[in-house]
Image 1 (cartoon, rainbow, N blue to C red):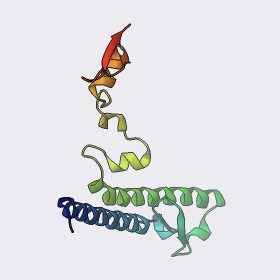
Image 2 (image 1 turned 180 degrees about the horizontal axis):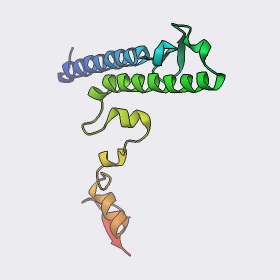
Image 3 (image 1 turned 30 degrees about the horizontal axis):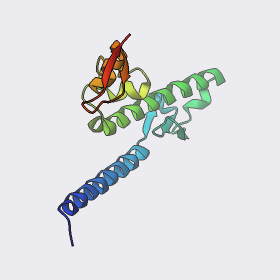
Length: 151
């Protein structure tokens, strides 16, 4: 025998499964993000993953052979930084639709977002708790709700 809540419970389960599938898809898309950059004169090409991890380094030309070790090191650092920046931008495109409005995904990923702006000026709390915080302690409930004892 079914109850009036069976349909609602079924809908909640389906909503949960849909959200779980959407999150799995988001994670998959995030893992697939990469960024590639090619240095000047095609001396070097690097690809990084979504967290900036170095996935590949290529030397499409022999231009690197004419560089000093310091020049080559500097070129590598700059090229990896450019690839990471591109990967971050791509990751931000994937994440943006899933973030609260007003939160910049690139700033969040770079650690420069002011997430405090997303919070209300005061935390949400039941009136009895707010009264306790502002005015004193709560006395035992006498049947018509808790009472605030003033200090």
